[in-house]
Length: 322
Image (cartoon, rainbow, N blue to C red):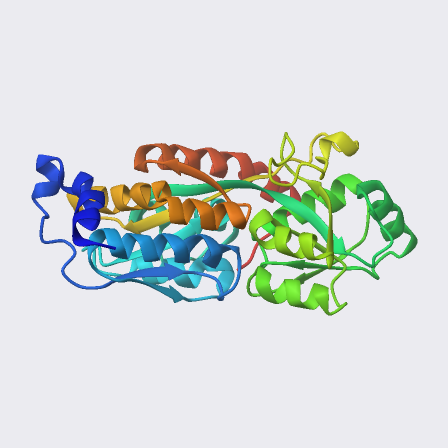
């Protein structure tokens, strides 16, 4: 990129008096912590944004994968970082809004130690099976599971993850016995599905579409009110007689609470500008990822809404992870 174009793209970040107070930020590389292993849906969203943010800000934004504890290891690293803007973290609605309901003794307090930056993408979860499984829709899978109780395995991105919670909703509404096998992220679960050890997954389109397009995986349903525009042939669960099986999802970024407001504003604007970049948009479009930018204030409301939404579900299911 030529210097004039780069300066033009960065110009909006320095356009207000508040941002002028931190004209020297950043002066060194920034760390973006992703709380899941490489290769999963979190990586597919974070890495293109990180690369573009680095170009906009003039300093590298390096992705650091810290998988484990359902994303909590990554959030703990962000919560314990210096409040100077040089570390921020990727989250999805499950990690930031649901984990506090599942863990009694987190080593950090999300409400006290973390602050929203922006959301980046929106999407829904797909119910997926191996292409060779004799089930072409939800009702056929339910029938198969009832014929083989306890013999089919479900691979989740981790216990208490949004994929696990969606599974719990599904099996309770369907009345089937499918074995939950938790993984440290969706990527290893997918590998076991392709290897024949997992017969069911529920995950995002950025993980599902390539496998569906290749013919190795079949998508039975999407858990949103409407069909996905990039996979319009996949019906919703509502269309298949399960009106209450709806699980929305989104991804975004948080930072250490106490980070100066002007620095948070710089990073929020860098995220926004990255999502407006044609190259990032094309990358996401090719991966069937839908951009869904929201600012810090809106993201804070979304977190509160997700927490209120899942609290009664978790209490009913009785899931506790510590």
